[in-house]
Amino acid sequence: MSELLTGAQIICRTLVDAGVEVLFGYPGGAIMPFYDALHGHAGLRHILVRHEQAAAHAADGYARAGNRVGVCIATSGPGATNLVTGLATAHMDGSPVLAVTGQVGRPMLGRDAFQETDVVGVTMPVTKYNVLVRDVEDLADDLRTALAIAMEGRPGPVLVDVPKDVQNQKAEYRESGAGSQGWVKPRLQTPDTGHLEEAIQETAHLIAAAERPIMMIGRGVIVSGAYDAVRALAERTGMPVITTLLGISAFPQAHELHLGMPGMHGEVHINKAIQAADLIVGIGLRFDDRVTGNTATFAPRAKIVHIDIDAAAIGRTVPVAVGLAGDARSVVERLLAAVAPRDCLPWRAEIRNLMHAREEVFSGGLSPEVILSTLAEVTGGRGTIVSDVGQHQMWVAQRYPFQRPNTHITSGGLGAMGFAVPAAMGVRLARPNEPVWAISGDGGFQMNMAEIATMVQEGIEVKLAIFNNGYLGMVRQWQQFFHGGRYSNTPIWSPDYVKLAAAYGIAGWRVKQASEVADALRQANQTPGPTLVELVIEQEANVFPMIVPGGSLSEPLEAAPV
Ligand SMILES: Cc1ncc(C[n+]2csc(CCOP(=O)(O)OP(=O)(O)O)c2C)c(N)n1
Image (tube, rainbow, N blue to C red):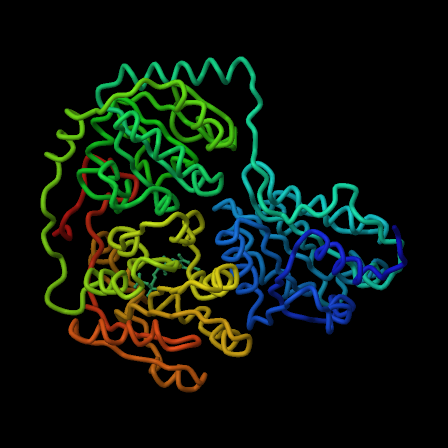
């Protein structure tokens, strides 16, 4: 069946036919035909954000929580460039986001027209695919191609740039031959090549022969839905499991085989276990520098097996003994069938002996530990925690007891401050029946706090927690440790957050004492609508342990250097 539609109507129709339900965006001159077509559109819910960066982060949060494409919309020029941080975040963390941008009309292209930016050029390195649509006849297929590429392999962001006159042109709309795919990630099959089978057998052999094997898992396990397979592999082999920052919640935290997070702010016994291991089976992670520290000294005794959908990631930072390019779930399921049962008990006992009680680093004030354990009690382990970037992000990663898959969402690769508040809006729209908490520092919160207005206008129930230490804490910590204690431009003033909440018409609490935490968090969790809790924490608390940037995992700092 075909019918005559404008380009703007074709965008709406193609998105609806692809199963898209929610868009995050902001209008402007070059995208006005699209917004006109959207007016009163029954099938698409548009969330008007307060800044396009928030649209991209919200689409990213929606994509990560819903395992489907998140869509953001912006006008040309400043609207499109405001998306860039969000697209780069999604690119680093493998999140499927489609950006649709308006562009100046074709006759104006390349003439420095008003609000003209070459957004295809600008976003080339931070998208998997992008295209300027020069002919309305190509529009629907370009959008379908972009949506498919966003989801295939390692997911990631894509961008379709549509000149204003193309949005106004008419063309026959033809439904996709493929039909609606809902843009839920298809179960990937890894092609059964002889090489893969060989590599699986070799890995099974390495696991059987190792004395000190560990598994290290990342977000690829979440994206491919490999939780059960990974857990079964751990249980069959007794291999302890380390979860990277983005792999947190890919394995139940309370499981006896779970160790925790490695790397720069990993616990000392976890990094020591890596340094002592003779085999690392890495699944769906990048072995980035925050995990490895200095690669020359990383896991010096270990053979590394690397399973990842992105063949380019294998061997990029650490040399591998066996590389398996494929979908984590299908590879791990096959590996499971190939491994012999064992329990690694002596090795697990050795790791337990490496553990030592950590000195309490918080001196009396309101500690992140109390806040996070109380929050876990208040939510009863339900819901999703979206963290921003900085010290609080590391405290969440180290201390919040995540039990359910994909309930920890953060900007890991790019480390984009300002992520949590808008991303949490997307998460909540994907999970409307679960509590969603955005945890930010006072710095990151102030980057995107204007989105409270979006939450109020659109009725998006996000719970906001601000860890207020009066500093850009993580940078202050580096200044204290490595720059002679000179706090250059890290003390940061905040408004009165309770009054700010009141100005937006939402309930707010300020907590200064440990005794007040439970009440405030409980009330904030129970009160309908968006709510805000400011937690005034110790100003100069630090995150420990810490590996000096570029240092070895064998040399942790457990106190501030003198
Ligand atoms: C957009 C952006 N700008 C700068 C940085 C560098 N940076 C990393 S952590 C940090 C401090 C964060 O301070 P705050 O939000 O108050 O959180 P805290 O560390 O105190 O928990 C900064 C400035 C960043 N990651 N992202």
